Image (cartoon, rainbow, N blue to C red; front, side, top):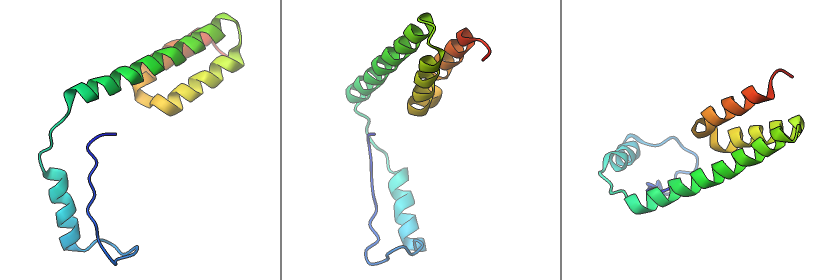
Length: 99
């Protein structure tokens, strides 16, 4: 996760943010920020490689006829990568056929 910001509200405990504190937080969100394109590309590449490795594991389990293992891997992929992996998950679930 890149580009995190926080706005402190000292001595407020769990109280709801005041209008002034909320305004400061919204101003912080609206402030222009630079993106380190190289770092972002590296992060995305890492995610894609890790996802590809997990998809390969699922494909191997499917090829070996291990439905339970394949289903577990696909569920883990879905939990970790969500929509990024939706197409791969749908395709592999399709190869599993009906239960």
